[in-house]
Length: 361
Length: 72
Image: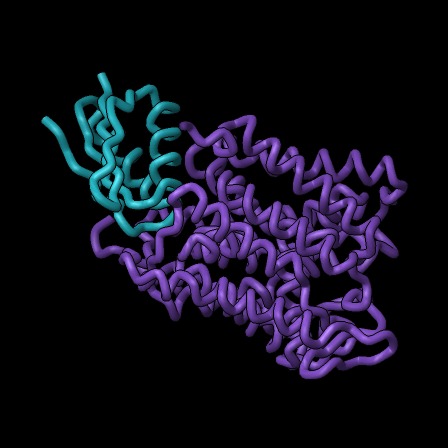
C-alpha cells in the first residue's frame, strides 16, 4: 500500500489539518498566534520542570508530548519504528540549543512564524525571510560536503527513551495537576499569567498533539525541508504542506475573528526587524544542518531516532539558557544579551558548517 | 554499467543529494541506491522521477531498502 499522506495531496491535507487545529487551539485557550509553536512549547516545558524560572512561560505542554507519542504510534502501526543513533550526537545537541536560542530571539519556531503570518503579524515576514536565508546557508554547506555522518541501527530501548520521557511528563501532569491560583503543584511549575497561563484544556491539547504527531510522522511534514528542498532540488513537495498550513490557519482565523493585520501590538511579538530576521537565520541554519524543523525532530524522535531526540533535549536546555541568561526576547524587544547570543550562535553554527565535511566532496 | 550509492544511515537531504549528484555525473545508466528508512526511500523515489529517471524496482533486504534506478 502506498503511503497516501506522503503524496502531494496527502502532505497538503496534513498541512491544512495542522493549520486548522493550530488556529482552533488559540480559540480554545492557547496564546495568540501560538496555537502550536514547537520552540515556545518546549520552552514552556523547560519552565514547568524548573530548568528556568521565567514565571510567565511555565507549563507542561501536552501538544509536545502528543507529537512524540503520536509519531510513535504511527511508526509502530506501519512498521516504521527504526531505532537508530550515533550520528555526531554532541553536534545535534548543540545545534538544538542554538536553534532554540535563535527562535526565542524572534519569538517562535518556523511553525509559529507561519501561524503569526496567518494571524496578520507582519513581523513574521522578517522571521520567515531570516529562516529561508539560514536554510540557504545550510544548503551551501551540504553542497560542499557537510555531513554529520551515518546513524547506525540500535536497540528498541534506545528509540523508546524520549517517548518514555514524554510519557513520564504526562504522568507528572496527571499526578500534579494545575491548582487554580497556585504557581506550583507538587514538583511542577505553572504560570499564573503570561503565555504560560494560556492553554487549551489538557485532553484537547493532548488529542490534537497525538493526531498531529501521527499524521506528521506518516507525511514527513517539515517546515525547514519545505524551503531546503526548494532551494536544493527545486522541489515543491514539502512546500505544499507549508502553504496549506498558512492558508488553512488564515481561513480559520478570519472565520473566528483572530486575524489582525499589522506590525505593532501583535501577540507575543516585537518589531525589531533586524533581530527577527537574524534570530531566525540562526534557527534556520541550525535546523538545516540538523536535517529537520523542530516539529520534524519530534516526529523522528517518536520513530526511534536517538539523534533527533538529542536535538529535542538540546532545544529544551537551550530554552533554559535563553531565559536564565536574558537571551530570549519579550514583547518589549530583544533580551539584554540576545544580540550577542545571535552572533555567537551564528559563529558556532557557521564553524560547524565549515569544519564538519567530507574530505573529498 | 551500474553504480552503487550507499546512503544508509544518512539523514535528509544527503540521500537525495548523493543520488542526484551521481545521476548528473553519469548522465545515463543504472544505479542502486541503498537506504534504511522509508522516508529516504520516498524522497529518493520522488527525486529520481522528477529528474526523468525511472525507478525499476524497490527491494526490501532485511532492514534496508534498495532502489534500482535507470536513466536513458
